[in-house]
Image 1 (cartoon, rainbow, N blue to C red):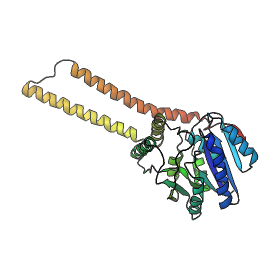
Image 2: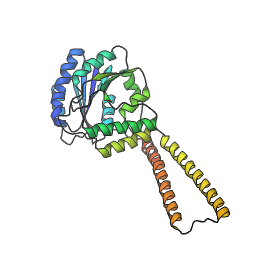
Image 3: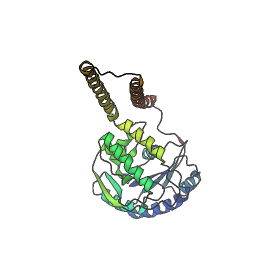
Image 4: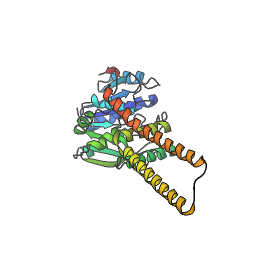
Length: 305
């Protein structure tokens, strides 16, 4: 098997048939053996009807139906676990990533690159989507001390070596792009065309982006814990100098703080700070709890081919 194409399906029922036609046209042109893996992530539009019909009529298409909605990165994981290609293409189903760009990416991969990312120089997304994407990656850069380009998404070609290495990662918190960065190997980015979204709307709302950011930061960085330590030391040192200043002022000029207002404000501030710190620590403990339960990353309801 030369090429496997993995596409998680959610919210784009109208685009699936066209995606299949374009992928088939491209793959038949650039290789002799290929497979297309559609992973239905419990799409609310009942896309399984379309996906399963395509798979029944074409042995080159593998259709996987998850038992519930696990999320995009878990659907990609399911595809990786069931693919056989020497090179693997990961792309969204909404046709914003052009299937015809696969030929360009694949030729570059054959030059010896393990990861060939498609760089969307001119992203055809809304201002809100572009802005939140930039903000997400800037935040991720700060907390994980790694560089992230907001023009690069999951769309790319990955060698079997990269896929097998990623399959060895069993974290419950999944972010495919971060895992690709972690494994390393020889990488390159090339410019690709990016189309406007014609079918459906993005499932990544602001709240989902925030949750994904928190999940990614907690799963891949302990920097928040270090910042808490620094904050605690700063508050302690500030309190010490304040106490010394008030003591000196009391004995030199008779100055004293009267009333309970300043005391109550200080108490509420410190208690709020304390609860915030406990919340961050609780997130890390929650991740450990999820990991030690060792539940499956996804559950398959049905598979065709």
